[in-house]
Amino acid sequence: MRLPTRRISTALMWAIGIVLVVSSIGAGIFVYQLARGTLIRQGQHEVVTIASAMQTRLTAEAKAHPTRTPIEDLGDMATGQRYVLLTTSAGQPIASSGSLPPISPQQGWNQISGTGWINGTPDHSVPFVFTKTPVPIGNHTDLLVVVAPLYRTAALLGILKSALLAGDAMLIISGLLAVIVIVRQFIGPLKDLENSAQRIARSPHQTDDRLAVTTRFGEIQSLVDSFNRMLDKIFSAQEREREFLSNAAHALRTPLQVLTGYAHALTQWTAPGDRDAAIAAIVRETRAMKILTDRLLELSRTTQLEGSSLEKPIALAAFFDDKLPDFRDVCMHHALEYIGPYDANATIKADPLLLESLLRILLENADQYGSPETSVTLRVVCATTNITVQVENLGPEISAAEQSHLFERFYRGRQPASSEHVGLGLSIADALVSAMEARWTIQSQAGKTLFGITFAGVGRPPLAASSQSAGETKAFPIP
Image (cartoon, rainbow, N blue to C red; front, side, top):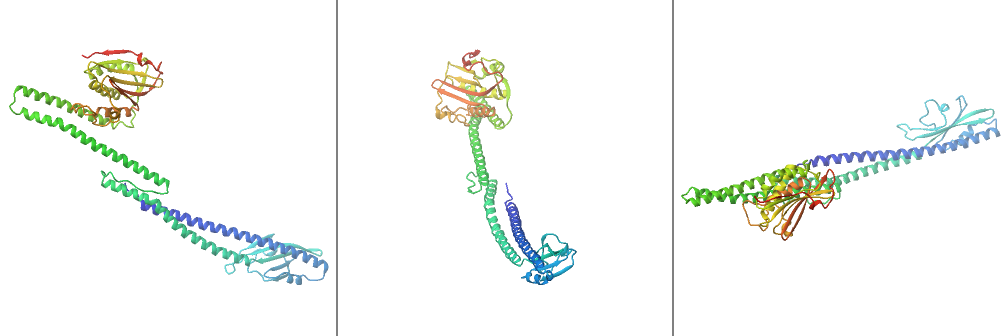
C-alpha cells in the first residue's frame, strides 16, 4: 500500500495557492473599481452642481446687462482647473475659459448629452467629468459645457491601488504560508499511514505496529481509526491462524505417533493378541484422524460462508421427516426423542445442508455427554415471530465459565483429552449459525443441558407460542 502523498501535497498546495491568488486579485480589483466608480459619481455630482450655479449666474447677468459679453463672466467662473465652454445650439463656440483638457469627445463637446466622464490618456491618467446644460440668453438658448479634472480622486485612487497591491501581496504570502502549514498537517497523517502500511507489508506478522496519530482534521482521524481497526482485525486473524495451526498440528501429532508406534510394533514378532490390539489401535486412531480432517475441512468451508446468500425456505415438518433416520444414526448411545412443530407449515429460511450439519454436531455432543440410560431430545419450538430448534440432553452441567469458551477452537473444557473429540464441533456450529443469521440459546443446569438455535419464522404464523409441548412426538430407541 503506497499513497502518492508527495503528489497529493503538491497538487493541494498548487490548487489552494491558485485559488488564493485569484481570489485576492479579484477582491482587489473589485474594491478598486467600486471605489473608483463611487469617486467618479461624486465628481459628476459636483460638476452638475457647479454647472447649475453657472447657468443661473449667466442667465441673471444676461438679463441685467443685455449688451455685455459673457466672456468676462466665464473667466470668473473657470477657477481652478475647470474648463468652461459656451456654444450656440448649433455648436458654434461663443467663448471658453480655463485649461483645455488633453482629451475630448470624438463627436465634439456640443454633441455630448447629459453628464459623463472620460478616462485619462497614457500620459495623463487623471479622469475628467463633464456636463452640458442649456443657458437661456435673451431670445435664444446657448449651451454651457463644464469639464473638471479629478486630481484628488486620481491621487486617492493611486494610494488605494498601492495599498491594495501591498495588501494582496501580504495576503498571498501569508495565505501561501498558511496553506503550506495546513497541507503539511493534512498530509502528515497520510504519510504516517503510508509508512505503517509499508512496514506491515515488509513484516506482516509484526503485531505491535499501530498508527499513533492525532490530528485536528476529523476526516483524517477517522481514516486513522479505521486503519487501526483494520490492523486489529488483521492481527487478530493472524493470531487465530497461528493458534489454529498450532492446535491442529498438536491434535494430529498424537494419532500419528500412535499409528507410527503400532505400525512399528507390527513389523516385529508379536503375539496374536498383541497384533490384534495394535490393529484395533491403528483403526481407532485412523478414524480419529478422519474425524479431525473432516472437521478441519468443515471449518474451512464455514469461514467462506460469511456474507454469502444461504437463505432458502425450509418446511421443518418435511425436513425432519426426511432427516430423522440419519439423526438416529448419529445418536448412537442414547434414545432420540423428536417433538415436532404443532404448525405443519412452520418454515424458516436457512440452507438445508448447513442445518443438517449443525444438528449433527449438536446431536453428537448430546450423545457424547448425556448420562447413561437417558434420552436426547430434538425439539422444534414455535413462537409468534420466530422458531427455535433445540437439542437437549440429560447430563452434567456446563458452568458459566465454560460456556464463555464453548465456541473456541480445540476447547474441550473439563472433559478428558480424546483423539476422537478435538474441540472443533461447536466452533464449526457457531460459524454455521452465523452464516444462517440465527442466534444461540444455551441453558445448562445440573442434570440437563439445552442448545437452541433461533431462526426468524416465515410463511403462515404459528398458531400458539406454547406449542412446544403440543407437537408431534416420535421416539427412536437405542438399537
